[in-house]
Image 1: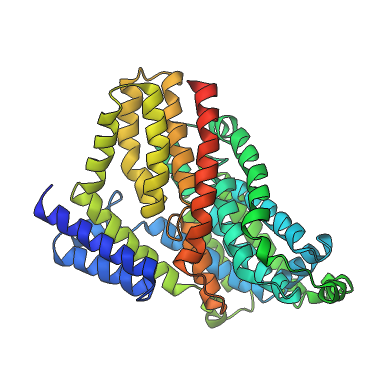
Image 2: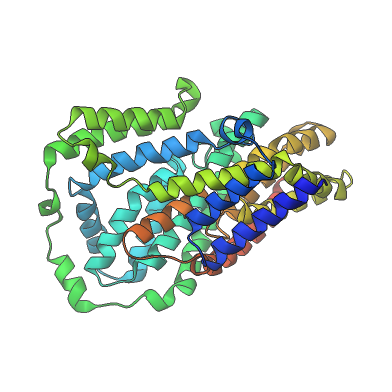
Length: 429
């Protein structure tokens, strides 16, 4: 590798260390790292801001922006308070039952929509219900972020890496349902059991609080019914457009921004009220992270690592599959799984062709999908949903540290990826 490549590695590691240690704010670390990458010519303005392969993914940025505005308007209707009381009453105030209910809803919604949109919608509900039951919100938010990544892996639209894989491999929505969804159901059952063990210290039952919640009427929480129906109508159209993306050919980011614009224009909500809930630090953090990872791609660092891993398998499909699964899980924990999959997709396409290009060799695509989607759970910056959850938590006065998230994430990732080994081996190899 060149001197610039080595310098880019050093800059990335320093920025990542600062993010993990929290000695400086994660936004400052990401922006500082991005600035230094530009300064040392590891990347340039053209590659950082306009390149589809190595630049800021504006689709992700504007998808988040649009959905944050829609959620901000919905918050004013009281619907999240309604859902919080409803969930608490269905769980009868029992913390573990509540967590199971929330993570299952999150996983199902992530499979139908996408994981980032889902956590934007579920997080406000979580804060309200935890406040009602005097429970710490952080464990519930962490559990939901991980459930969103697991559930999102089941479908083509559930997780952004799946969209990239489908585009490169020519896979359909039904392909993901057939090959990914069965295993995701098993993983969710296991994950629900893991939640009982990982977060057991947070399940403190308060009978008095539970009784108070059971006595509430959730319908009284709705503050503006007209705005609620307007917001739900726009949200329903946005969600339908997400699902119909393969037919309509509108990017999710375009749909989200259009939905946000229509909602603000057609209601009495002011522009200031609409943008009040936007997590600007989260959007800026993503931009900096994309620039840093793009610089590693530009200087050939990530392709060199990927190609070395591929060469080590020496054309053995079984070995290639297992190495790809675990390497994807590990690397997606370090860099966001979206740019990682974008980088790996052409390499996997070559590997599929080298192994015959038939249905048997398609297992490599599923190994990449499982590894990247589930590996995103390992650290606080491994997946977009994780970063969004951390931003929302900090904004609501419940900061979640990098290591607080990661110490749970590493366990969940190791268990879920390990369970994928026999699935891939027995079904395809």
